[in-house]
Amino acid sequence: MALLEIRNLKKHFPVGGGFLGRGAETVKAVDGVTLSVEDGETLGLVGESGCGKSTLGRCIIRLIEPSDGQIVFDGQDVTALDADDMRVLRRRMQIIFQDPYASLNPRMRVGEIVGEGMQIHKLAKGGELRDRVMQLLARVGLREEHFDRYPHEFSGGQRQRIGVARALAVNAQFIVADEAVSALDVSIQAQILNLLQDLQEEFKLTYFFISHDLRVVEHISDRVAVMYLGKLVEIAPAEAIYANAQHPYTRALLSAAPLPDPSRKTERMVLQGDVPSPINPPSGCSFHPRCPFAEKICSEVEPALVRDGDHSVACHVFGPGATVGRAAETV
Ligand code: SF4
Image (cartoon, rainbow, N blue to C red):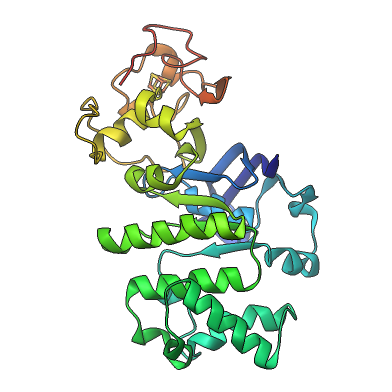
């Protein structure tokens, strides 16, 4: 059953412009995303920096207001909620940020940080609150004496554990992890990913896991969605993405991220240039200026995201919606 459904979600930011915004241009950070996340699932969202994935994550829990579209969480239209109802719902929809230091109040002790949400939502108080915070600290691998310390006294990995405990304290059901391990060393990354997986089973959590790193997403995801310039270009079960990616952008990302298993061969496909400006995205398929397989139609017509079973691809040349040229190649 889908816990979260995103329907044609858009976030357009006006930029520049003079008096009364005349001449302003529009950044289409998220441009018509439709996606569902099953209860208990981990959906990995990948793409290069600037592709709109963090904006999408923040829109889902309305840290950023979407420009258009609908978000339905557990049958409730999130986009229609007023600020009070949203505050109540946000207890169930939490976010873990890339930089845990910036997201932890440096003047609050760890016990206060983890317990704050429980106080606000009146989930516990007094000795019960303290006991519950202690239990959570232990569960995420921190010690009792950490309760009275300040965030600056912790390493990056420990600070991320504090962020996880804070999300669990309010009985979160759905967690957006926005580049949650990107700033950590590889060995610490693995520890935090293992912790998140253990907690998922224990607390019945659903993750929306955002990362630019396909290796990280593979480790934790049931399905992977690939985003390019505000749009989804491929969605499939994780095994299908890593064994049989169809979209040239996904294949280029895989090629750029060496996979830990040397027996798995990937084609070499070097991504040319940077992500184009989302203010004036290229016509047709916005990946066409960087795509080695581009045909004439690619610069003229935007490909739809076409589904075949549980694998969806937006491409004129590869995947179930292919209308020209070669058959889908196996990586
Ligand atoms: Fe490349 Fe064309 Fe497919 Fe876009 S639609 S990814 S340009 S082949």
